Amino acid sequence: MNNFTNLGIDYKLQEILSNYEIMEPTPIQEQSIPTLLTGRDLIGQAKTGTGKTLAFLLPMMERMDKDSPFVQGLIITPTRELSIQITEEAKKLAPAKELNILAAYGGQDVERQKKKLKGDIHLVIGTPGRLLDHLRRGSIDFSQLKILVLDEADQMLHMGFLDEVEDIINQTPKNRQTILFSATMPKRINTIAKKYLNNPAHIRIKSKNLTLDEIRQIVIETTDRGKQQALFNALEEYRPFMAIIFCRTKRRVMALNEALKAKGYLTDELHGDLSQAKREKVMKDFRDIKLQLLVATDVAARGLDIDGITHVFNYDLPQDTDSYIHRIGRTGRAGETGMAISFITPKDGQLFATIKREIGSGIDIKKRNSEKNHKYKFKDSKKTLYNQRKKKSNKKRYKK
Image (cartoon, rainbow, N blue to C red; front, side, top):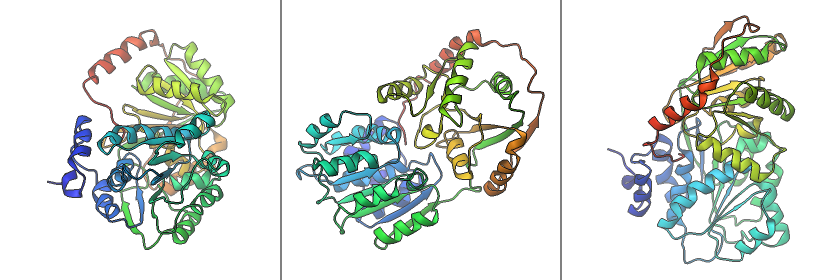
C-alpha cells in the first residue's frame, strides 16, 4: 500500500496530514514527490482538484532548513486568492519543520510585509506584481533561493504576467530547483519551461476527457431577456448545496447578486472592485458555508479549492475553452461528483460549438421555456443549508 513514508515524507509532516484525514497520496503526489526530493526540476500537468499543492509543498518543506536565515523557497501564483489558499496550507505544515512563511500579494500593507521580511523568512508565497515591488524596494532577496514554484503558469500567461515572472526568475540563482505546474501547456509556457528549467521530469495525470470526468455538463438554451429567469428555474430544479455563478463583468455580478438576494438566497459577490478585506471575508464566509451561492467574475475561476461546491453555473459563457475548463473545475474535486450548467443565447452559438468540439466530451442540451416561473421555496433555504452542513460537520476540511 502506498503511503507518504514510502515517498520520503517524515513522520512530523505525516502527523499533520493525518490530523486532516489525509492518509494516502494522490497520483500527482505519488509521482512528483520522490522526484522533487532529489532536487530535480519538474513540469506537472494534472486536472484540477488532484492535490498538486501538496505535491510541491511537502518536498519543499523537506528540503528547506530552519537554521538558514534566508528565503529558500518561492511560490509565484497568478491571483491573491490562490496565494492566500496556498499560504493557509503551508502554515498548517510549517510547524513540523519550524519554518517561517510570508504571503506577499496586493491589497495588503506593504510596510507590514517589509517588516516581516526583516525576520527569518524561509518561504515566500505571492503574486508577480507585489513580489516585483519588494524586489525594487530592496526589501526582499532571492539571491540564495533553493526552490522556485510557478503555479497555474497558464493562468499567469492568460493574465499577462509572464514578463513580470521572468523579471523575478532573473533575480534568482541559476542552480535553483524549478517546478512548474500548469493545467494546460500553451506554446509560450513551453518556451518558458525550455528557457528556465534544466532537464525537467514530466508528470502528467490524464483523464478520459480534457475536462473532469466527474462533472456532468448541461447547457440550457435561453435568451438574453430570459437568462435570469432560466437561472432561477435551474436553481430551483437542481437545488445546489454550494455553487459558484460566473458572470462576464463586475456590473453583471453585482446586478445578479442583488436579484438573488431578493429571491431569498444566501449569496454574495466576488470581483476586482472589492477591497482585499472584503474579498477575504467573502471567501471565508463561503468556505464556512455561511453562503450558499457565490456570484463571481473569472477572478475566482482559478485555484479556489473549497469543499462542498456541488454546482458551477456559467451565467455568461466564458470567452475560450481553457476558461471553461477552469471554471467548471471548481466542482467535482478530489473524487467527488459535480454539475456544470451553462446558459447559452443565440449569439453564443459559435463559441459554444468551439468549446464543445475542443473538450471532446458529452454535454446535455436542454431546451426550455425560460420565461416560465417556478413556485419558489427559498424561504427555508437557511434551514436546508444548516441541515446539510450539520451532516458534514464531522468531515475535517483540508484543501488538497
